[in-house]
Image (cartoon, rainbow over all chains, first blue to last red; front, side, top):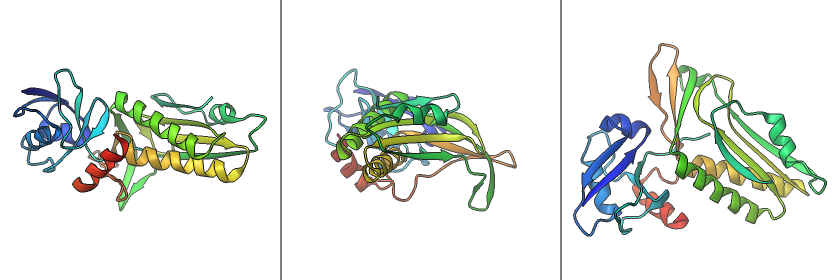
Length: 78
Length: 157
């Protein structure tokens, strides 16, 4: 399954884009997206944090068509 | 009326304090974060904040509701600015009011700590020599380590 993932801040610099599409084996899960995204650049951590539909998500969370998926660098607000 | 916001314009401190004033509220606690001119040994000339706006708004709203549950009767306004900020400008402000000071302090502290740990906002430092660098998360940020990320996500899923 093709999953489009939004990418932010330092991770966007690492992959050279603010949006990437990755192939994830089915059934697609957050864990699969994590591995696929990490493989895009040596400058990404092996297990980057993922949000699904604007909520932090654990590896077992399924990904469905139309879900909003994003990879979240360590936050640094304030 | 309690609220959160992510803005690009300058933060008006007096206006936000006024928002949480009220006859039942005997205490107002504010936290104001400003852009510092140094990072370690380097001279910083400004910060560029970026945000995952949809998620940041939702996460800030969650934090607000948690703080209101912690400090029943509080009024809280939490505003984070994004975009390019110069040294000395205000990047974040929390104003929390309550009948009594202890709960006002608790509400203010809970809100700023939650924002720093959970809200998807990032900043890039600009240095005097023209170079830039993304700021790594604070060491107490729950999502720093992969294992903690899972626990963190589970807590707030």
